[in-house]
Image 1 (cartoon, rainbow, N blue to C red):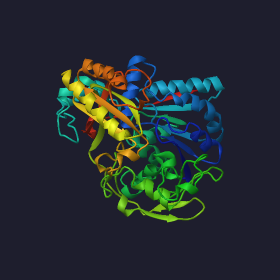
Image 2: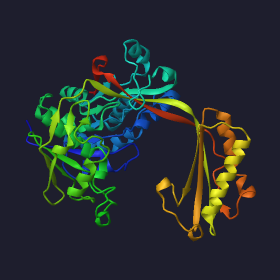
Image 3: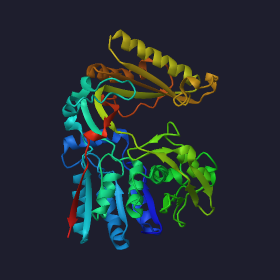
Image 4: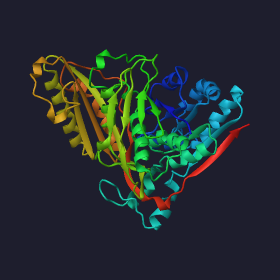
Length: 455
């Protein structure tokens, strides 16, 4: 058993800094590079891409990234784990294998985790008695099942551990939890018992700290952010030990900062009940976590407690829910906000007179209330330099949304004065993708690990 492993975060989402994983591999020693590419909406985007081209459906940044880092990873023995396989993990793996062959790299094992995609199993699952009821409304999925764009189960660390046990150098998964990417190498390297819930929770907490990339090393920090070099920010690294203690750090040569504040802020990011952080692998108690700032960009995380996992996996579904469009105009001083409000009122009355049906019409006055909404404080409308009027509509009627797009530009000559900022042409209807969270009994699911080799 190794005395310690270093797990580096390389991506916090699809679209994160593309050089971050390169710097993690080249700026110092690490054993694992983990990259989280998936958000709930990302799966539906990837599914739409795959529908257009069966070879797509994964984060297509990955092959070009692997071309840059694969020689170093192979030479240094760095293993790569990512959920960037999206809805086509095999396609992603095949693209990486093509890169390896191009670079002349041999003796490489690329593992694929399959089984999370249940879109084609919905009828079978419903017939078994599970109607994938919406976690927020309780409604059955049956009325919208034919509109589904994607349906994926959140697997945990177990299939990744299986892949590592089969000798994988690279593990490509579909919808796997962010935390599972980091927990898996700890379970694999230290031989942790799945029923030692304190250790499994310790690895899960480490995964939660790493899952948002640079957000744990100075990015998006409320405290003292102005003193941090964010230009060359180094992403966080978890230095993990067999007893469950983890030290969060970063490469010394890179910017950013790891401190009590940066780690603590990330810990409370996107959690509900802090006593029950539910994952497929365990239920972690965040109120038990202790932090100790060791200085020099090193923060110790320890004493994490946990409980057994639940009997369910979370399911993330997306479905087509009508159409939307939005457009904007800029109104200038004097009385910029007054003019923007008047333009909004005129447009709404014109849409009403056309007897168009919308499920929602939403207006934002950017520069005044677009972020804080009704909590925005009253201002002297004559003191505002400029206001951007942004108005959007949503409807199941494509033609209604299309006609809305034709009513924005006429405000320039038929509405309040001092207007500018209309560019890009008429807003066009876009398909609305709605989110459907649900639970599914674990007994209905089975993952599959396939290992592909470059000999």
